[in-house]
Every structure is written in structure tokens, then in C-alpha cells.
Length: 380
Image (cartoon, rainbow, N blue to C red; front, side, top):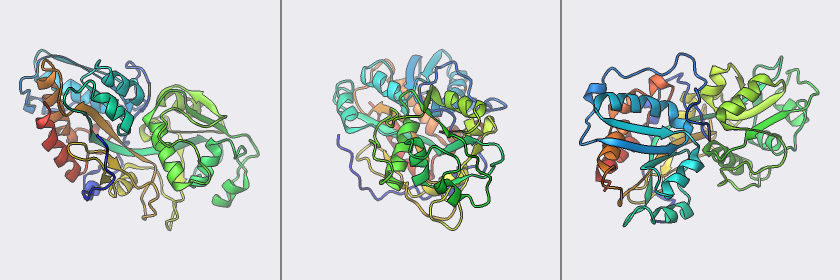
């Protein structure tokens, strides 16, 4: 299935549905399934689990992929299993790339991914989805924060060009003129920037690359589709928790991660100079203003979204991601299909989306959620 880039459906309603101040997406990448997300207070449980429709769900359902959605998955799974006796859902947060690989090898019923399937991955899925194909079903979205540790500098401002040059090892000192120009009056030290990136395949890495290649194409010439870190230099750490810990523990450091990790570690985050009247801070509310401009680029039952990384709208934070569930539209295994449909029906339902706020996520915009709700019951 070739994904079309044009579709009139817009996610115009997201601003009204995003909970202001939410921490949003937790980890993305190949963090292991036992990793505790860096979020104080833990995950809350829905009191309305008994309202979940089990719809023939039974037995074990295996899934794997992005840990950006793992906090939400943990909550959804707990609620669903409490309501549906005898059902066991095992979601492994091994990273977007790992999840898609397992899905296309027929090892899991669905995969979580922070980026839509590539065309070659869609083609590969057709070997597993007998008579069908893998489709992208968005579930949640939020900002990717640029977190840093620099004593005496609490309100750092960067733009796409400087971020690209920092992570491409072209700006190596904190008092570089490009950084100083964006931060007049800041006491920037003459010290080396310690830039950290993900060592594992990550949808967060890919989304950052899409932003940089779109907003700063002259300074970031790497493959924007790559889930592996494409640039030379810098230091690698495994998973979002790895880069978050590296920033927390290293003076002069900088990296990219989901906002909840930076918030829980009390790390400072960069405000982005987008060309709007004022720099834009990383927050779920500000990210929603950018996601509001998303368009559906998928065709048929595919709901892959195209994000506007070059937005200059006031208060719109441009480094965002939407995380998907990848499933077969047709050709699902008969023994797991009822559980797959019942579980995804719950996760995209109004009840399932409402509990996201407690886990620090931003619910889907109403228009997109309605489209996904119409598709899930048709899976076969």
C-alpha cells in the first residue's frame, strides 16, 4: 500500500482535548520492559474498568514496540485485564524499530511505533497480513523536549539551526556565537557541549531528524527516515531513560527525550525560536498547537499523519511526535483477533483516552479519534 500525502482531514480539535500541563509522552526507544519510567507518583488506575466491553477477548495477546506509549499501555492493560477475566496482554517496550520487526515477523499481534510505517515496511507486512496490509492507527501525541544541564543558565533558547549544528558536532562550545546571539545576557561558559543521542533504534530519533531536516535543511543533511542516530560524534546512551540520566548527571550536557523524562528528572528544557514573536517552551499545550495542523496522509484505513515541523504559529512547539498502533487491516490470526479488537476499541474509546491525562499523555483530537474508532471494528 502506497501512502498518499494528500488528504483533507485535519486534526483541528486537538487543542480543546489536550490537558494543560500534562507531562506527555514518556520514553521512546529500546528501553527494556522492566524499566520504570522517570515519572513521580506512578500511574493511576481507572475506576471505570468495569465499563470496558470485552467482546469475546480471551487468552494471551503479545505486542511490542515504542516505550513512548508504555505508560499508557501499562494503564490500559491493567484496566482491560481487570475487566476481562482470563485475558493476558503482554506489551514489551523494546523500541519502535524492534516492535515493527516483530510485527513483520508475525511474532506480535500489534506493534507500537512513534512513526508511521515506511513503504518498504508496509510491503513487508503484506507477507504477514494475509490478504491485507499493516496500517497505522494513532493513539497519543506530544512534545520531544531538548533537555540540558548548564549551571547558571535556566532559560536557554535555541533554534532549529543551532540544534542541528550541536547534534552534528558543528557547534561544540556553549559560548558559541550562534548560541550567544539567541541568548543575550546569558552567562554561557567556555566549555565543551556534551551531546547525547540514542544508541538504539528510536522513533524519537526519527521524529527529531524529521524536524531538523525540515526546519533546518541546510544544517541537517542526514536521512530523516532513519531510526538509528545518523550523525558522527556525540555520546550514545540506551533508551530515553539512558539519555535522561546522562543529562541529569553530566554538566554541560544536552539531549532529546520525551517531556516526562525531563520533567521527572527536573532537567531544564530548551525553548525553541521558531520565528514566532516569542520562543516556545516544550509543553503538551504548546505541542498541541503544532499537532493541530496535522493532516492524514494515509489512504483507506491507514491513518498516518503528516506533521507541520516548520510551524511559526504563536505558541506552537514544533518538535512533536504522534505514536501509533500498527495492526493488520485483514489477515489477523483468528485466535487473537477478538482480543486485539476489544483492546484497541478500549484504548481509542472516550474512556480509554480520558485516562491518558492521569498518565501524563495528550488524548487524540476528536476528529482523528473518531476515524480510528470506526476502523478498529473492521479489522479481520
